[in-house]
Length: 453
Image (cartoon, rainbow, N blue to C red; front, side, top):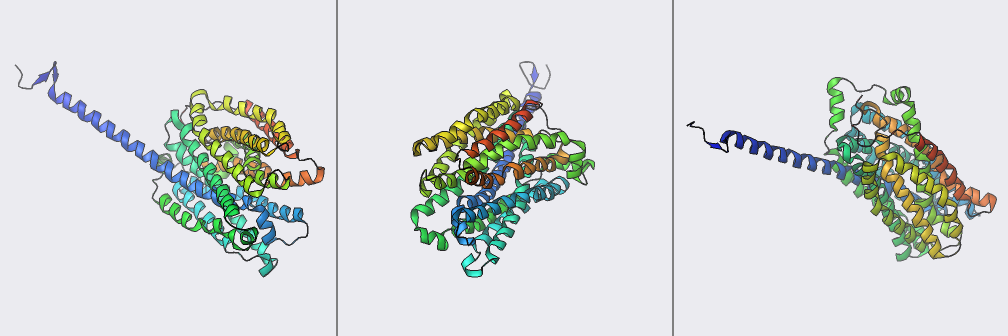
């Protein structure tokens, strides 16, 4: 009889080795899961802070119009304010190129750190600006310059954050995990809306004009510092590290993305049009719209937007998971078609009652949540790792100029020019039609490995 003890014909040493291997595998799985959670938490928290900072301006548009612009015509002052809001989007493609270059050339971590630092600085500085009554024309000029810094920072945030998360997510969970980045944009926007609602409730209009509007901007400083610490501690993307090890890092990633994958850039741009138009009409402009159309008070409008954002947030993880099961393409086609059917009726019923207006906003918010659940994973899957952030940023920020920052301004102008309160619906219909055409040409990418080079 062998001196090696056996169990069921299998050497004990082999059994122990197998058990040790299973334990080691379980330990590795737990470590990988913890690593993914850390990455998602840092990425999502930063996105929350970025979009809180960026969206507060829109929710305070009617207040900022009074503080920074001298005009006897309230509509003109509001248009100036929304013009500054839109102008910041013109800088987003440049920010996308610069921060995308940093992300694809030197790593995701330094790019994400720079984007949040720029946003926190600009937001804090806006909170410290003197009013038009104090320094005259210098006030709106400084406001414009700081909004441009915000635009540069926002232009590089989402592409780098989504690329980072997509590169660590398992192929079968990429839709669900990358959707958390847009969940962060929703939470940030919701916090911006809620903070403005609290200001309206807790202080008089005179106090809000005098100093209360500064509070949300100044909160950006501690939030930004926390995010900087979290992001600086992030590990670098393993896909990017492999690019560095093999010498495959692109020297000019934005140019390479345009040269090697123009279809991907155009696909991102085309799909983003409806999402941007829907997002900025539904979540940022609607509060101003309700007040201007005498549908409800500023306080009620802020709470309506906050409720719409909260309900939208709840469904984002569900649709992200669904995109991993049924694919990105069918969901994108369905939501574009739904916007074509529902956009005009939603604006039509808003004038009937406060309840109808709130319900219509919630319906539009649910459609936008579906967009936001699917698009980030779809965009990342269009590009190889060496140009992923740059290609994403180029298409995404081009659409932001066409349908993002211009949406509130164009909606306000159209209503004033036509006298038709339903004019914004036509903007959303045009954008949805273009995005639907793009979705119909989309190649399905769900559950497939991300392209490397």
